[in-house]
Length: 434
Image (cartoon, rainbow, N blue to C red; front, top):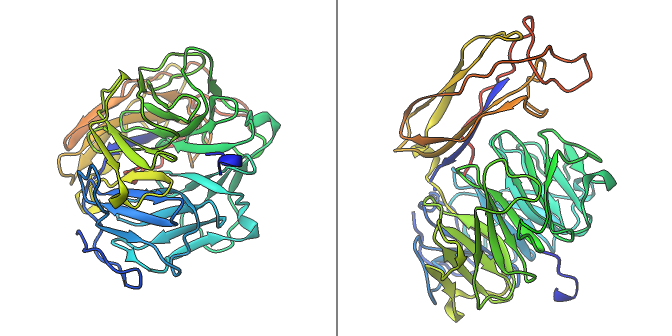
């Protein structure tokens, strides 16, 4: 949020992955153990420089079970929090120009296990974050109007592998929410221009968006956060200009109406979003010092089904929120089998994804086809399948796709595979819950 005076046939998988409970510890005590359970609520408290951690299902005027806070933590006005399926906690520190990481089960005044900071990072009031399936980290810089992308495992004074910034990006100034799907498509909340700008996987530098979501039908007004849901839907929070939540269908673009427009009274400055395994929507009210929860199917004027609010919560300008998914040990693994390693014009191709080892995995599955030579699936896909529902372990076949033209010459984006070029199809792991 802008504070100003307010202070290959790749497989993109979006699954409901779900990460025990520790006693409240003194601020001088540090503890790291097993990840907290599925449904645990993490809140980045900007004003108190803390990560408040609430038991699953918490609502009302309740105290956090524990918190990460203290001089050893490196926390400084945290703007966002994300947690992997292994329980590692990532925090963007708006006031410290850093991203700090904490061990699973971290609690109290504990030092981070990794810190990304320094002049090479390009951080300028880092606010919201997103984690790609392979651990690539996307960070939106509120003060510089840019998005930094870091390689998995980046540490210290790391240089981004990509930075998206410049007049062609369409960024209006303040960059807040960043969301990424399983194939690396990047969605950026363009707060000043009340739009969502969307970039192809691998976008870098002064890149032009592939498309934009904007216009009177969208309901966007000061969009603050954007996240990609398990079903491919796009969730957007609108700040004090509207205090609403828009939910767009997969593939929405242009001046399109949302599937859901959640409005309510009694809130002051809606900020960041989180989803639980049931699709229920959490949002922080930065100036209202509360975190309401809305039903997955909420629409129109809606009453929260839960709300963390009151003096016992210790909230002081809560900003980021994240709901823990299942631990990695219970997450499914996915393998794919393409119908042919090479395809030609007018030759249909398909893929099959197999889920195994999960505990009743649910969510959604998207197949994406990438052109020849794109072994990292970093360019825009030539084909994106409709969203398929995942319900348990088993095999899920993709729709068939038939290329209609030869691949373009070298140096141009591939839009189809050729008979002599292997299909680019690196396996994609189950993404960490975001």
